[in-house]
Image (cartoon, rainbow, N blue to C red):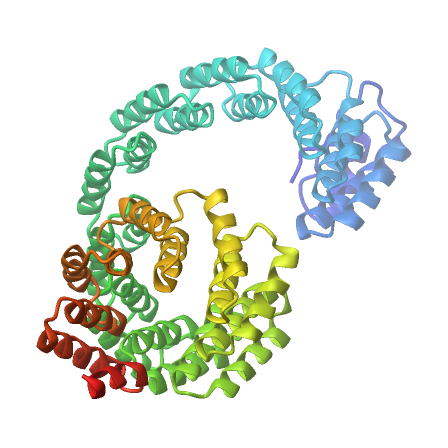
Length: 558
């Protein structure tokens, strides 16, 4: 409790009342009369007790009463201002403290703190400066002053204060780290690296400077050096779960996913019963495309009752990739049962339902998604239109894409899909218009270049332009099997069958699962009078797409 001076005549009374040593009364420049002193002391004690118990409203009321009886008491004024501060009455607190005639460094710091909370940073800086004039060895006020200067864009003044901080810092490492972070904000990476290096040398056990240096390497795109430092920290702290967990994010930042996986595995080794650590490890395995191992771990977690919405989502995605659509659907539904605000779960659920030839139900899922997540209406409408396209309901798809473009006229993906829907409807001029718009907007859009080129080739029109468009697409993606197929097809349409066959063989190397490629190859072989090879190619195409009657007709006729 505070020391409090009172006149000597009251000591006996207070000893009896309090049952112990009396507290000293606030120091004043002019002593009040004995009665006022006693009343001031009585209210002050009550205020102090209320303050200690956290009842700031009552404490403020008692301190105000004490100040009425002893208005010149510096101690009462300081106590009341501190309570005002706790009540976040920063203006009242600052005014009350500023009324003290002979201010200490602490008084100036208090006023500066109040002004800092009211965002009056220029004034706060001036009071911190006054405090430092009285006591230049203070660390925290100088640090606040430096940060205010930095925030106000006074970089030179901030740097000067941070350098002064180094002279008085009880912990040099902390001071160097503050200086380094300032240089990072100023984008002076060389000086920042130097400060981190000084911090590292001042405390070799502190990993923060090393992490800082790794961040500088990363900012310079030197991921090799960054990785080296990150892993050095990891190895030095191979048993520190909390630190290793933080480093996983660092490795992801430099796209070192294998290292992130190794650290995640180590955390699981250190804490084998930690379900959250196992979930994270499973997610990283999924991200590294180690699907069997990820699935095994996720299933184990599910069996232990530790599955959450995210885990079910990734299990669903694995089954979706494996084309096990019924199982994928089940996992998506479990994910949504736990968290129904993830739009990806809704969209992918609709997709796997549609893959099971349940077009109507897929649309129902999209309607449910729209009802639950109206803020994601753009994505929902886009994928609803995509489902229409997959079911050859191109008019409905076209309507959906046109609706999307009304509010997003510059969206390339919407225009591309609208063009594709128009092409499938035989509205070639409308389709051409959309693809030309995309190519003008983005001359390196390989998909649009190829689609327009293939559309011309398939119809046998504008073959010279078609060839040029597809060549531009291939210059961007030279190993794209679909683009190579398009190129072979335009050469076929131009009667250059040998060249077409050469390109088609390349296409098959990169796109062996597309029935269209084998169908086209069959047509090229047939044009070259190699009937048996033509039949083999068409048979392969029919094997991949058994319900294609056009391919079946070729086999039956020839």
